[in-house]
Structures are given as structure tokens and as C-alpha cells.
Image (cartoon, rainbow, N blue to C red):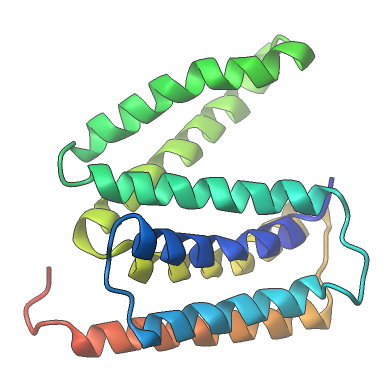
Length: 200
């Protein structure tokens, strides 16, 4: 319903949801620098979205809802990371997701043709492996620290959108991306400086 880079830009509200959730639900200490880094990243996303200057399509509400739900996934992963192994966590998450996905898929079900299977397998791998990496990250660090790194998706989304679908982003999108990267870099550099000398 919308360009990949635009949809991903709207999902940049995810770290803000995650930081608020980490503070309210996980009772993490969220320092001023993390709030500042997230706020700068969110401001960059607003440059891309331009609310009030351009009409936001109805699909934007779907993307924003996805951001809030993905933040819930991140917080749940952090909550369970200390009690379940990464592989078990991914397995159980997929077992729960299958029947829920069937509810949404049933009305528009199309049986895949043989030529679709390689792409479907790729979707399965590309959808599972990142969750494994994310679980490892949440086991090693606070959710409020990891969440802002999600902003880097815009760069990949813009590249994929251009290469695969011929989509292009305007200058304001890249200005917003630069602001996002600046906010994320600020947070990460502060965390590295504040961390103990020995690596986790």
C-alpha cells in the first residue's frame, strides 16, 4: 500500500514505544541520554513523515500499529530472555504465530505454486534468523539501549526498495535518515563509554 522506505520510516516510532514500555513494564532505568537519543531519532522520523504538511495515507495507521506491536515483541523477548534459550524462544513464538496468522490468511488464502516455494523459504529464513540475533542482543543489553538501533532499517529499506521495486526516496527522507543515524550513534557511543572495560 506504500513505499517500503515510507512504511519503515513510520515504524521508527517503535523505539519510543519500546523505551516507554521498558520504563513502565520492565522497570528499566532509562537515563536522559537514552531519552534524548530516542527523541532525536523520532524527530528524524517526523521529518520523513511530515505530519500536517502532507496527507498521511490510511496505510500509515497500519504501520504505526505494527510499530507498537513490534515494541511489545521486543519487550516480551527481553522479559523471557533470561529464562528461555534463544532457540526455544523463537520456536515457541512461531508456534503461537502460526494459528494467529491463519486467522488473517484464511479469507484471502491462495495455495502457493511450486515456483513460490523458494521465495517462501527465503521469507522463512529471513524472518527467523533476525529474531535469533535479536534474542541474543536482548540477553546482553537493556531493551531501551537496543531499540534505537532499529532506525538503521531505513537505509536497508531504501536500498531494497530502489533495487527490487524501483522506488525512490526524496531529499527530506535522507535528511530525516541522517538525523536518525545521529541520534542512534549518540546513544550507542555514550553506552560504550559508560560500559565496563571487559566486553559482555
